[in-house]
Each structure stands twice: as structure tokens, then as C-alpha cells.
Figure 1 (cartoon, rainbow, N blue to C red):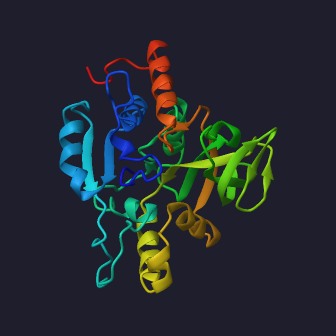
Figure 2: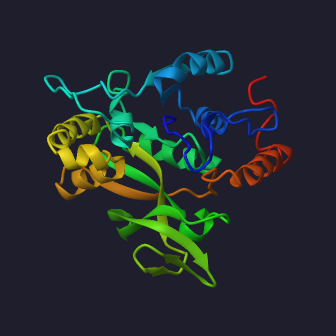
Length: 289
């Protein structure tokens, strides 16, 4: 998913040159996925970025990798539905996934383009998909809360509630920040140890998600308040499937580190991390010889 506006970052962070040879952060995700036998890359972006990304990526990715670059557009609505109002924001992350409904027909992973998830996360996602190829079992790749904070401001995270390895819910916390030996959510006042598992929006989904998103989108579009003030969020849609018994969700530990570029100040740290990993031979440079 690469359709965000980067409001806190100050520009389109998805297309910032963070790698040692000027690669975008999402290219490291693609590299890690391909290394673990993913063979189809689908990028969801803004309409004005489609041609640029097609040209940029098609000349870099291996020839055996299928590439689709799709525009998330506010005019992409369910059949028979019209919307004549005004809205500046996209419809949300669930709608971004729904954008890919015509090009995906099997299990797939969903990630943010401005996050680094670690090579082991893609390996664990691939293993899960091989173990659950046809059933309606989804997965969330989990990360340790204290390892996902920013030095430069509060962050929002989905704190995972689990029973065994079954995900029961994800509680959105909006202003999490390290404070002494604990993590405080300034919005709710909740305090955490920092060892909790959180969602960084790395999901393994099945095609059944597309029908669910469409039905939820139809409901969303009948609510003027939600149209004006909200979005259709992928985690909420999956939780509704979970609560309705339409899917089960496993929490799969990522087994690796996460970092992102929420704030402009995160850029230098991200660049150093990628440089260090390249020098440690986890990546080649350039990524696409």
C-alpha cells in the first residue's frame, strides 16, 4: 500500500531514496518477498504515481515477477453505488486492498510501503501461506511494542489480544510513547510493559476479504458522518470477519525487527539501518543489478 500522503513526514516518503543505491524502502520489501518465493507484486498508489512506479519498478524487478501498479481512486465504488459528495482523503486501507480484487485470486500478504518488516517476516508469512493455502485462516505478523516506537514523537499502534496463537482483537492506541520503563498511551491513559505484540499492518489475507470489504463499503457509504470523518480500515474489517466467525486469524511472530519513517527525523536512522544491513551482506547493492 503506497497511496498515503506522508503528512507527518513532509512529503511522499514512499518514494524517498533511503537505500545505499537510492532504493525506495518498498524495494527492500519486494526483495525480501521475492527471496521467499513471492512471485506477484501489486502496488496500490495514487493515480498520478502509477506511470512513474510502473516505469521505475518494471526496469528493476526480475523478469519472472508479475507486477501490477493500481490506482486507488475515490470513484472506484461497488456496482450500483454512486457518490456525488466531496472527499479529500482516500477511502482507507481496506479500500486500498479492495482495489486489487481483479488481479488477486489466492492467498496474499498486505504491507505498508513505508515500513521495513525484516526478512524473517516474509519467510514466516510464506510458511503460513503454504500451511493454509485454501482455508479461511488469516494471519497477522506481530512485533514487540517497545521495538516499534519512534524517538521523535508518539505513534499509533494496534495492541494485539490473543488466546494461544489465535488473535481475538486488535486495540488501536493512538499516542504511544516510551516513558521511563513503560509505554504510555497519552490518548487513553493506558500503560504497557512494552513487551506486548502489536500490529504493524502486515497481514496475510485470503480472497474472501474482497467480498467483505465491498459489503462493509456499501454500509460505510450510507453513513454521512463516516463519509465526512472516517475511513474504511483493513484491521477493523478483518476484526469484523473474526467476530462474525467468517474467518480465523493467527498471530504469527515476525521473528525480526521493524522500522519505519513516520517522521522526517526517522529518515537518517532508516538510511543507516539499510546501509548497515547491506554491509552485513543481508542485501546486495544495488538491489537490482
